[in-house]
Length: 56
Image (cartoon, rainbow, N blue to C red):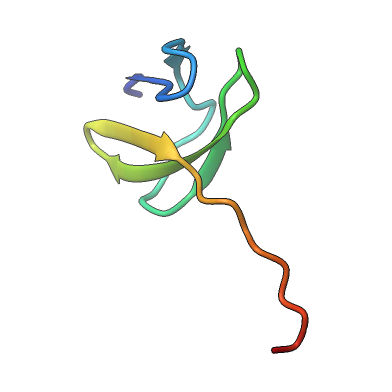
């Protein structure tokens, strides 16, 4: 299993399971939601905020 650096707090992130591209995981240090951009090698970016859909 590979590790990557959290783009928010620079902590080392090592998922507890095999992750796939597009999956959302949490940083164990700062709690930021991170999107897996690539699984091998592991590449993480801060997950986009989901906006509320008011039926528009």
